[in-house]
Length: 378
Image (cartoon, rainbow, N blue to C red; front, side, top):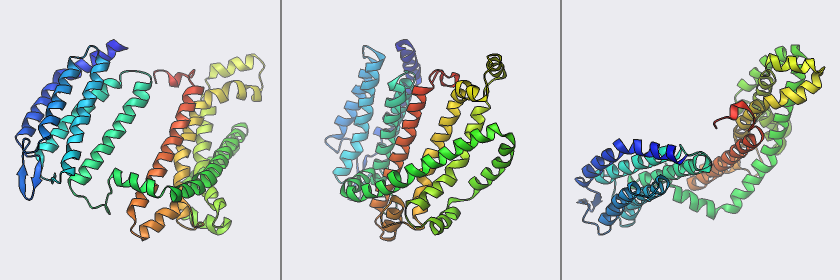
């Protein structure tokens, strides 16, 4: 494992370090930014040369580290130092919009991060599955923060992650009430009912083939109806509380679960079915012992797809009528007030909820289907 990691890192280093050095040298010839209309050079700011020197020394230290893994951590420190430089300059009141030297330097830092993450991705286990995605996400947030602040993008168009985090902290009770109403009350119930109904109907359709031929076109038709067309109808049928949101979720999640379950039940090989018949196993035993275990990857695929569809359906449905609480209600209300920080905070809660839901199902899939051929090498 360590040899593969080291080979990957050193192969990338052959061209990577040369490119990084060339970009950094070109960046030194350009300004960092401007103050009062005058260009600010690299050595006009007291700490800028220290950030630059620290980044260069960290890269050199990463290449001379006793092991590739330790070298990667040192190079990640170089990336962190490079991205802390624009934060420092912004706090000093420097306009970065014309700081082409700084932006070129950040391009070099991004390429360094890309190179290190590519090497870390070759290491199996938590490094590849947890560390690499986490570092990639932090890199995106850092780039978002620096670009928005550096180019002076108005907060009404796109707030920075720091403003969104502040809005999350300031409005935590309100956001929790919306989360409880939307996710814990509507999404969970609608998700369980929709997935459960899709699974049950799939079992019935598998047992009675003519049902599959009749239900699949109807299910496809229902899934093609836009949620903005279904939601107001469900609100009129079931009222403003959670039943109407759950009904929308059932409509959205039924067909993906149905089609994935049927595909999974049909994935058993002929030789496996013949073996079960040779043991005099009936339909029920074959279903429980062979077909359902073999269909688990398909079932989890449907569950993961529905985990995001359910949240989207509930939020959109709340635009058309809900009690004075809920994530969809909060988004529509705060947009009308032009309170975009709270809107983005609600979106962040929804994104984190959907990602956590999906990630939990992916982890459960890994724990329960590690024996399946589809999981080999993952």
